[in-house]
Image (cartoon, rainbow, N blue to C red; front, side, top):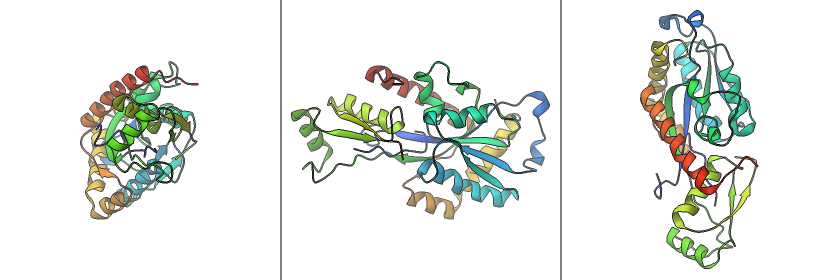
Length: 266
């Protein structure tokens, strides 16, 4: 079983979704600039996971379009480690001027705070801008090891042979790990976890809306939608308020899963 990371984050139909958010640290009064001048120099989007995966591909796709629209370079920078916390902490402590953004799946924003009391930053101090896309998680089995071709047959086999099947995930505390735990809770089965190392506004509400608007426009482009489709990503978009609500739902959902599955930092 492998959980495909979704950018951010229902059940059964889609065992989990991962969200990709653009978020910015709230601005201080002396960090404010005029929204009509934004951006007047390069914008950096920090991805807290490794290059090559969906979490990296989607912001690169959107960033490429934004750089052409804005006439300014949009640079993607990967800062990996600590289940996304390192990149999120970097953005958190950056100058709050709207020129350093974070594009991230759920872990550093809605999951890790349930596991670590002192992550080095306060997720609640980020300003959500937009949920860029959803990518469905996938349940994949080895046909050479299992004869099940449907989910009910797979669940039935697991119940007959508990703990004989391993769940390969992207690593402890990742979305795919929690998705596997959620699947076990819902199906009332047991899997052996096999972790791999894998796969508010910054200026003011006005500036956040200026960015929410540009990304939404990017997501409406046929070329962007076609490339997202090839990544198995479902275009999401929407308002900053919807992104914030999505984060709150994710915190509650994954907090419940972490407590029920007794997931720890170890």
